[in-house]
Length: 178
Image (cartoon, rainbow, N blue to C red):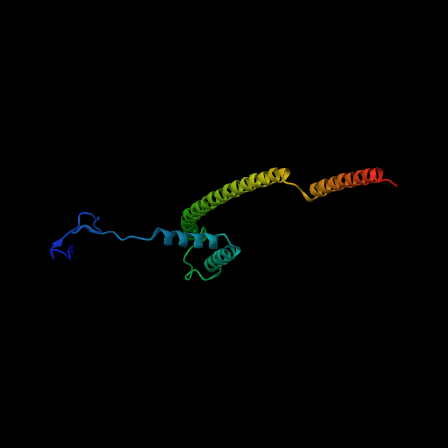
């Protein structure tokens, strides 16, 4: 229960969920993320050559201990039932841990793929926008006078002016009495 700062009374707040029910046994909780990280570390170790070497050393020592030492020191006789049980137990725990690690990796891959797809869609949209802008600029530049066009127009105007000046000079020469 919380004490209200306004009234000073001990009343439970009805707008917030209770964290624990009074009088009931609370079960221990675990962090699923921490368990997932641990399973990934174990799965990563199980997939290495180091694990295979250590497991081979363990099995060789086990078999050597139970075949080469005196019978009083042996704890698992020839069919090695206890060794088979230990290896089966290890495999029965390794398989679900590996599957859990693969599921977590699949989830990460799915998120990465969705982010890559969104990034690709943005890149395509940006590229299409830039292509439209370049096309608009080309279209706009098609209507704008270029340097070559202005030079050709000035050249034609100059030739027209020269021909007009020649004509004026010819008329002046023709109208002047000698």
